[in-house]
Every structure is written in structure tokens, then in C-alpha cells.
Length: 406
Image (cartoon, rainbow, N blue to C red; front, side, top):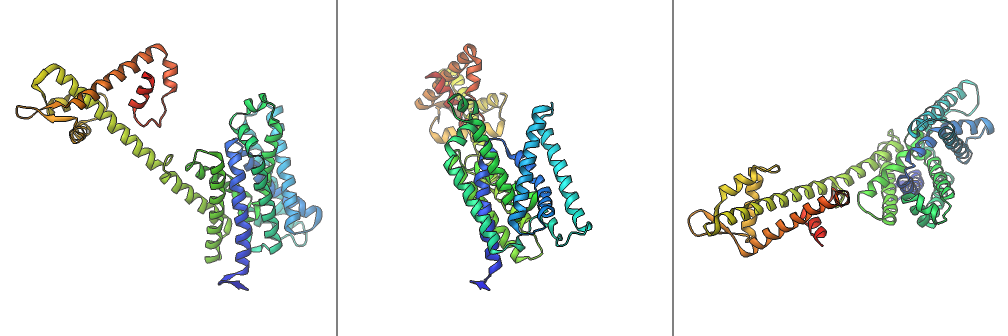
């Protein structure tokens, strides 16, 4: 049975995995903002033991039963993580590593041992390591979609409270919000999406569905609401791309392809995002360097003009003096000179190769010098407060100097 040339089973898998991808991106955004991503990894590695225990307890292979067992083991793993952190002197990263290694080792031992112990119908449990979307039925896909939609809806209902706790838990507690309850809800949603994502990506890779889409979305926006929607869209897109690639090359598993598609989107976001992307940041840094070099050349022109009065100054004198400063070089200062000439800041003076500052250029140079003096005085009076205003994203030093002067 096909629809528009697409096999029915592929459509079923695409619908289920797409719903999981969207909800994982939305829920994962809260986990990333609250710094709970590694907690999800601990829960994911514990799910394999839960799948095995559910099969041993019931003898059933239906997806709902196995996922309930996975959810129970994920909750137990997170409880063990809390106990290790609270009653030992183990650091967070070490506690998470302990829970991951022990729970995953138990899961591997159980899944490997069940067939050897003679339990009928146990073959194929190891597919939960990397996912098994090819075995999804319409009922399974509906279950995954329903749980995913419910999880995303809960995030929407509790978004304001969860965002407040994620950014300032101390303030939320001081204003009366139940921080522990909200934290528990976020962790429970993370555990739920880890379990729901097992058929799509498996215990090894499911955490990537929760982490990569939010991190990619964070490159494009500074607001939480758009970040959640964009993360969901990235997760959905990665899921559809992974399913399509797996359908085109049947021997390739869907889960790893979904994760690779999400990683490709993240790589593109890291490079091309308009504000936080690597290319944009490099362009801003280069623009800042050009503006700073141009300001130094302008300042040197003012010094030469003050010393030479009406005689003017030569380009070679200014460039040599500016290139000898701590930043920049001869090529940069030469480009800065050409830019100042193009802007009408410098003009030829009478007498051969000599130059002078135009009235606008002289005014700009004196204003820059005034701002630098104000900035120096601010550093002398309150160095800590002044440094707090410096960030890597400054468009130009002059903008901060102007704010300090005001």
C-alpha cells in the first residue's frame, strides 16, 4: 500500500518520528536552559535495563509495555543520581558518569543474557540500542505521537514558570514559586521524551534529539518562545530527513541518520546564524578591528595636524606612526587611510603630497579623543563597573565610550 508513491510503512514511521522530534526539541530546550541535558543522558542509558526487565516481568513485546519499563528504569536512575549526589561527596559529573555506566552495563547484560536463558520471543530487544523504526505499527506511531503532543502541550502551559526557574531559580524561590516542583516536572518531561525517543534513536543516541535541536535553535534567537518553536521545527526536520534517507537506503538505521541530520543543521546554524554564527562573529570582529584602526589613524592625523599647524602632514608619516602602535599593521593602516579619504575626512593640502584634516574630520578626531579621555577617567574611578560593560559583542569601542560619557 502506497500514498503518492510513498510506502505506507514509511509514512507511519515518518509521522511517529516527526512527532517525537518536534517534542524532543521543545522539551530539550528547557533541559538545556536549566542545565539538565546530562540528566537526560543518564536516564537514556538506563532505559535498556527497563526494557529488559519489562519483558522478563510480562513476557510481552508490545511497545507500550516495554516503554513503561523503560520509563520506570529512567526514574530509578534519576533517583539514584539524586541519592549519589546528596549522600556522597561525589561531584555532579562523576555521579552522572557512575549512573550512566552502571545502568547501561546492567542493560547490556540483561539484553544479552535473556536469549541465552531460553526466554521465547526475546530476540530483537537489542534493537533498542539504536532504535527500530522499521517495526513501528500504526498503533505504535499513534502512541508516540500522543505522548509527544502531550509533553509539548505541558511545556506550553508551564513555559513562564519553567523559564523563570531556568534563568533565576533563587529569584523564583524568593517570589514563592515551587522551584522543586517545576524542576521535577522538567526532569519528568525529559525522562518521558527519552523513553518515547527510544524507538526513533535508541538508548545510545536519544539524548542527541533533546540536545542538538535546542543548541542549534539558540544560534538563531535570543528569546525563549521562538527558541522552543525553532528547536521543535529543527527536530521535526531532522526526523523527516532521517526517515527519508533510511527509506532510500534500507540498510541504514533511521536513528543515527536522524541524529546526523540534526548535527548538520547545527553545523549550518553555527556557521550561518545572523547574530551568533561564526561567520557573523568573525565579520563583526573584523569590522571592529577596522573601525579601531581607522580611529587610531584619525588620532594620529590630529596629532600631526596640531604639530604641523597649517603645513599639513604626509601619508607616510601618519601610517608609519600608526603602524608602530600595539594593534594593526601597515596594510591595515593603509586601508584605514583610504577609507578616511573616501569619507571626506582627509583632503589634500597645498604643497605636494601633504594632507590635512577637513573640518568634519577634525571634529570627529577631537570627539574621539574626548571620549577616550572620559573612558580613562571612568577606569580610574570605577574599574570594576567599567569592565562589566565590556563584552565580546561590542560593535565598536566608541559606542561604549559615548555611553560612559553620558
